[in-house]
Length: 255
Picture 1 (tube, rainbow, N blue to C red):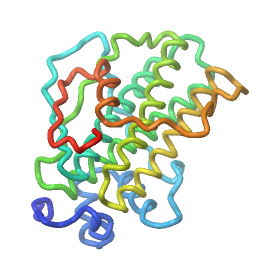
Picture 2 (picture 1 turned 135 degrees about the vertical axis):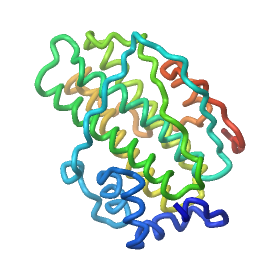
Picture 3 (picture 1 turned 90 degrees about the vertical axis):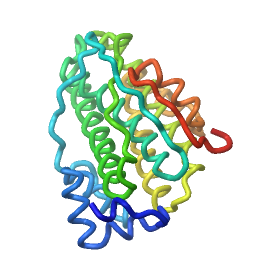
Picture 4 (picture 1 turned 180 degrees about the vertical axis):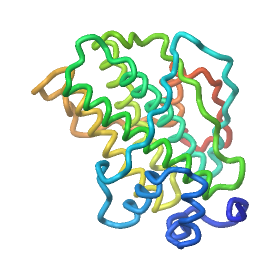
């Protein structure tokens, strides 16, 4: 845990630290997931591993949308790049919980093809979520990682194809806009490269869902340039789906 307390080291050396054999072993031990390490290894060179090469994560218990709880508050501190990582971690938690629920309780009339898409999206989002959890835990000062969020999906009818696909499109479009909008606040070129690799996958998710809604139309990519939203607008859009009160500190200019 010693390296967790380093203060004065720039985020630009994050991947260099992970590349060291000792750091890799510690990273794996802290994270508890081989998927996150595999993703990091792929992001450090030009041969990024595909999703089929990564051991699928275990299925997490679905969130009960009808049983809300008093969720603790969460603070996003944007004083450095780790604030952006926590911001992404929060969004990936939300998406992973959503697709876990969809797979656990499929909507009426779901086809085998649609079920496979939902399983793939669930596994992608869980890997993204666990990547951020592992990276922040291993590389940031102790206590930096935010806690687990409690979703609020009471406004989504998981038995309705229209409701589920509409929510999915909203989450995926929001995720793409969130990464695009937050990228300019990252100081680390390594982290910017990783964010670019994740947002490209999120955009494929958005295209796949849009094609399920309106097959063989230009809905899969209606615009030549995707939207970029500042974190403040992303958090406002996500707020109805998260029970935890979220506080922001050290917001950068343009937030």
